[in-house]
Length: 157
Length: 157
Image (cartoon, rainbow over all chains, first blue to last red):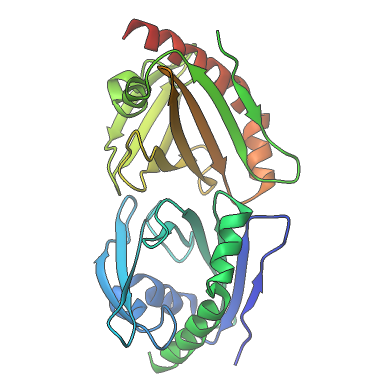
């Protein structure tokens, strides 16, 4: 299985994540933009994802809940800037409702070579401190687990 | 007249702008969110602003054109994340249509003391290079002129 590479430099507010998948870009893009598919891979395995709102167009928004085994719910929301496409990727804002006002801008791009697709994701917020807080909250482990789940899902499509 | 202070550190992708206005926060907020008022101050004096779309609510979008004396039009667009308010400020994406895909996240906050309001604006994009390109394109001069015009407008309201 491919490795998820996460880069978060100490003197920069960016988090960059790359991961290669054994699937064409069109399929990876569908898994990112169709809510029924997103709900099958985004987040740690122990959480269930419920999509509350999903409109993947320019000035459309999304909101979803992650639900843990005890029934606790964690809400996330954002808006899409530009209509997502395989060629241009996806640009969206991101906010964990448990930390309101801490908003990030995320961009995901898809590069296909010989039927395999590299996902390159970048996230930036308003401070290095906010970025480090997300890392302290387990963002890296959540991303690795999400991408492993995405690889498994793509193998079934 | 107050000074517009613009900070853009070489090793950081942020642009920060602060400016104090002799007006209460509620009034400055109106000038930022009501399109008829925005069109009277946003941008350099030599350009006319035409608002094409303006929906200052969460997942609402905006688009406007700056028109120069020769009739050339420059389009800008973005999406609001969170519904703007005096207390929380404004968070929005920003894209100059002449540089498509170069998207920034902007936050404006309003702090009122003794009837005077300090505006604190922060902008961040996906690279220091993109930020420096905006500066090379005259962003600083445009910001200073915009804020002088805003001060003049506020004095009439």
